Image (cartoon, rainbow over all chains, first blue to last red):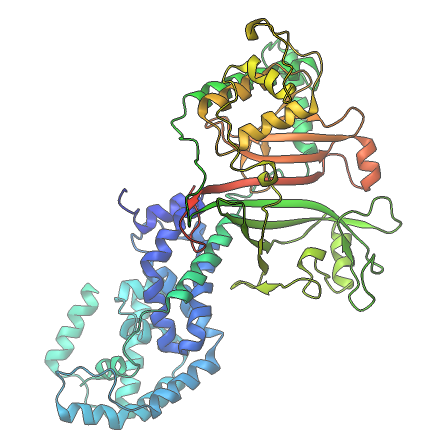
Length: 198
Length: 389
């Protein structure tokens, strides 16, 4: 059996042979499903993840072939579908605000940090629920889908500079609302490097 | 802990999606593959008149400059052109390295994905038949009924057939095509009634992930497409020499004239049963390359078969079609569309090609009456699998 085609080649081939698109599904379905599940919950994740790939398939002619990976593109489609489920997303965030802190913390984090996180959970969920979508989307693609700046720009079809400014604004809002300390000079420098090379 | 670390700790750790959910999503996507036309075509599959007109115009121009090879329209020269194309297809078929399919083993299935379209009649002003509480607007055929309209009803069909012939079938309704904007408005005014076979009041119909009506059912005997002609037929006894094959299909009960096959005369008329058997051989997955080559060559000898180049099928693919009148004077034309590069049969169709049939149906000459496009087939190990080719 040959090597599976990279995304860009599989999508190009799928114009004539739709079955080639299955490679994109197999490569990214779990990540897309996980991202949607975090945003709107398990009950909607199956349906929206399925729809994401149907929409992606229908729009495969518009995929930018210069991108080797289709992951930002399909996550962008998923993000647009999530916009139609804003009410469910807010409900999910409220649920996170109520949930216990046992799940999801890095065991290497100190006890104090865990206690902080537990204490801040309801406020954080409330801040997220109030964020405008043009700030929430890049923030969650960065934090939950682990995309870089350029990939977020591809996903949301906006310039990289716009991604950086929206992300920065969203992070500042969270820090202010949660009364977190801003980044140290060292952290700021690292962040600048990340931005420059992201 | 900064705000990004807090954010990442907010939702539970990612879980793997449920295997059934993944399988459902993949099947929905594969259903879309089946239903997809590769590229928008300037000429619709549903109406062949454009192809016939272009064919006639191009052939007339070539005839005017003395072109001798290409046909000059329906008639003897179109038959010569068809014979040439069929002989070339025979060469391509014979050179194929394709291995004839063997029947599925225990626990396996023969998978076939196809796209079908059928001209169906319906009554905008009221139900045609059916119980009072579930009126049927659509019926299979309403010839000549006052006020009746027609529409082309497409469906993707997927079959999983076990070695004993039991079939699991999944049918997904496509977008109904109307022959005019007025017809579509009438249909919408009537409440957009579904075709009979997808009417939820009469059948068990679900919706797929993209909202299209879909139904799945098991049947003890595979029906439809070419399946009822014996999908696992053993064709190994048929001769692989063209004239011998033609005689074998013309005289299926035996009694073949005892003349050397090379000396067998060209047929002077078309034998409908022989034509049907030869086209079945070309479609059958159990046919060897040599047998398919013989079938193409045998068709090349039969009179009354004409060429229609560059015909689109219902799945949007383009190929060469050989065509013949189903019965003299019937107005129905049978088309077999194949890819000349591979010799693979793309679709099998019947078209309203004569005034008699068109008048009876109340639709223009050239409208497709029924068509099956063969998309993918092969042996698979479960009902969750579909063939890649």
